[in-house]
Length: 458
View 1 (cartoon, rainbow, N blue to C red):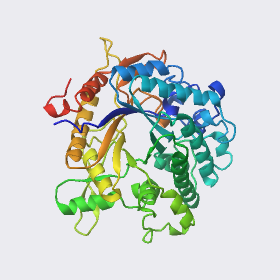
View 2 (view 1 turned 180 degrees about the vertical axis):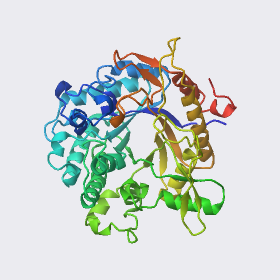
View 3 (view 1 turned 180 degrees about the horizontal axis):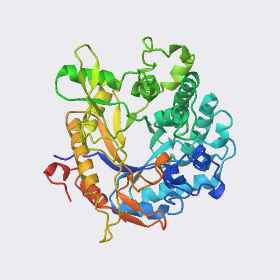
View 4 (view 1 turned 120 degrees about the vertical axis):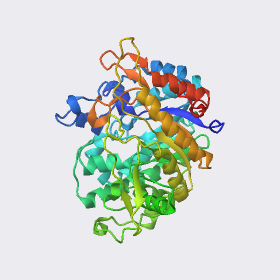
């Protein structure tokens, strides 16, 4: 049995991680441009100044996607490439670049899915207070209106924001992502609220500017996901409740970002110690935040495993010694793509996309000139079987986007984590399709049939 006939097979990327050309053709600086240029922030003093040089090598990367039979490409637009100061004067050359990218994709029958914000916040807006400035939500809507007005005659699918847990939590609270701050609780909750307002204003802007009926999504990280170690209903319910709890780390929690959008309210905070730090939330604010969306994007790499403790709580089960893990140190837990979609659909009743899933692996060019990344093939095979299991039970997952097409700049770890199905030599910018890329092409051509045949399809 294959995947549903209309299932979408794609790959995903983000602008800062691949484009390079960080000062070219009128682009303004982002907080990542400035952060990576400060010594000590990034492994091996790396930056995204060049990255995969995708801004210049766009044609080559689209040709690779076509050769791999990729059906859809999720990419982000760089806010400071369009509006160098974050608002105001438009950089037409930036818009021209994405015009060209969309046209090239459509020439190859690859459907564009555009993420409007994937962390490269304009530095000039950061100087005006960044996410602590409520006006940023309206600046974001201005930028979104410009992009949608330019591209929506050809682009139907839009994602407002990617992983606020990272650009709010990791960036402003933990200090290990740009701009590298460690704000207090009151400021963090305010920034989070403004991020959600930006999402809501963006939804309104998309619908107002779109030249064809848009399909709009939102993609928080699925960091906090617990899967039961048994089919015992008590274990299942305990893990479901834990997945959506807004406990000791609300900024990392799924429900903090999706409940306001999909349910029109923040999760219950009465039992926690941070209520005094929360901003005042008006009915107007919540109306903006809860503008209807069409789908949730799930970025899923792993799950915790849990069980009921007999007292209504979930206990996280410790990994066994020598457990399987990726090069990034994340556990290999394929059931994440079964329980994650099941839990999300039951709570939010939205269509779903897996907007990111993949593995950081130790890949290098072998003596025969190829990259034999069988671990990635095995990883993806296991995860996609679990996704098929969820779909076969009626969970409405519309598509799967592998993270990522090419090896890229992986934020604070620089170039040490390779997630791509295409190998990048970051010195000469050569591209080599890995064995996993050939394997993924066969999965796409068979609409998942090779996954279900009992072989690895390679």
